[in-house]
Amino acid sequence: MSTPFTCQRCGKSGGGRVERPPFPHELGRRIIEEICSICWEDWKRRQMLLINHFGLRMHDPAARDFLYKEVRRYLFAEGGSPTSIDPSQEGSVSWPQS
Ligand SMILES: [Zn+2]
Image (cartoon, rainbow, N blue to C red; front, top):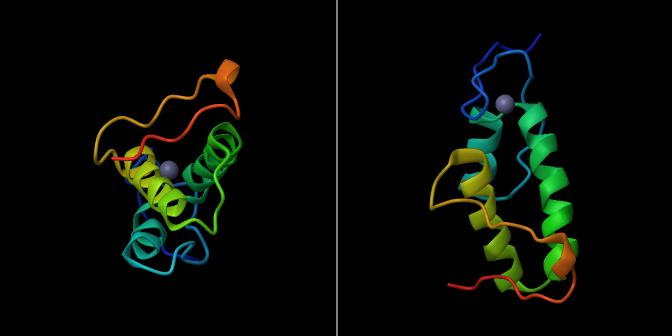
């Protein structure tokens, strides 16, 4: 039995935890401590959309940084609103690099 906890994002406690830190740094630790597996699945769907939409190549450090920023925005509401995805622009846009 895992210890019940309340997800920081959805405020529910029935989702269960993410089993393994999905990232090798502080962000991965926060996800297993604060985010439920249901919200994590939401993020994974969004991540696929972002990768397809912006044509992200995950060996590119700038693309990974962009996704980490989006994780913070989407799951932790930090650093502004999540980047919007316009399906009509798929594959033809570059990600916002700040
Ligand atoms: Zn949640």
